[in-house]
Length: 348
Figure 1 (cartoon, rainbow, N blue to C red):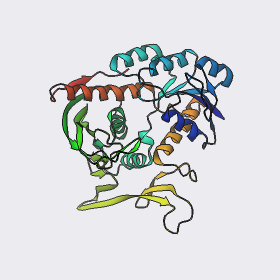
Figure 2: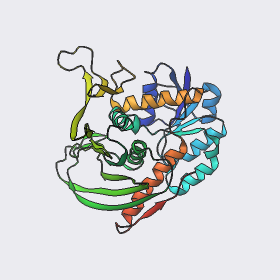
Figure 3: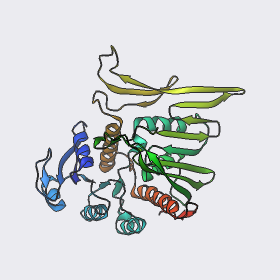
Figure 4: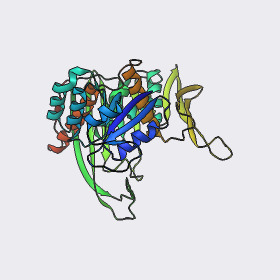
C-alpha cells in the first residue's frame, strides 16, 4: 500500500481522499489544515506533524495558488515526493523561483488530469494510433488556461519549448444558469468575456484556445475539441479520415455506458470504441465514478507507481510549468491591444 497526505481541506483535497478510498493500492493517511476540524481523514496542524505521525509516501498539495510554492518547497526539503495541484505557482516569476528551488530534485509532479479524462484519453489514443495521420492542430473550447494548453501539447506530442501567442478578448451578454454552487435561478444575461488565442508551437504545430467565462459549468455553451491531422480530422466524438484511395470514411467514437434501460449492471462507463477498436477501457469498473473521478483515480495510481519506482513520472513539474507559462502568455496577449505576439521561453 502506498500512502499519501493532502495539504488543504477544500473541495479538491476532499476529492483526492474520497477517491483514494476506492483505490486498491493507495491510501490517504491524513491532511494538513490550519485549524482543527472534523474531517473524514486524520487532521494535522503542520506538515512536520503529519510526516512524523502518519509517515506518508508522498503529499498532494491542494492549496491556493499563492500558497502552493511554499508547501511544495517544504515537502521537497523533507525529501517527500509531491503531487502539486495546478498551477504549481501563480505567475512566471513564481514558476522560475520554484524551479530554482526544487526543479533539480525530480520530486515534483503536477496534478494535471485532463488528458486522463476518459473522453480525452480516447481521443488522444485515436490520434496516437495514426487514425488521422500526423496531428497538426488542436482546438479546445471547454476548459481554461493551463488545462487547455495541456490538452494541446499532449495530443500533439509537443515537448517543452517556445511558443508564439496571439489573443483577443471580447465581451458579450450571456445567461449563466449554473455554477459550481448550483443553479442560479437567474435568466438575465450578464457580460461574459471570451478569450480566443492562437498558439504556434513551431514545426507546423498549433493550438486554438477559445474560452468563455464559466464555460466549465455553463451548459449554454458547447464543449468542443477538434484535432486536425494530415489524413483527417477528429471532432469531439467523430473521426473523418482517408482510409484508401478515393475512400473517405466518417466513424463515431462510441461510449458504452451501462445502467440504461434494462441493463442491470449499474450505471458505469465501460469502454470507448471506434469501429472494432477499443480506444479506452475504464480501469475502475463498478466504482460508478464520473469522468473527473476516473481521471483523478488514474493520476493517483500513476503517482503511487512512480513513487514506488514501478512507473515513469506522470506529469513532471517542467511540463506543468510550461503549460502555465503558455497560459499566462495567452492572458498577457489578450490584455495588450488584442494583437500582441508573446514569445514564451523554453522551460528547462
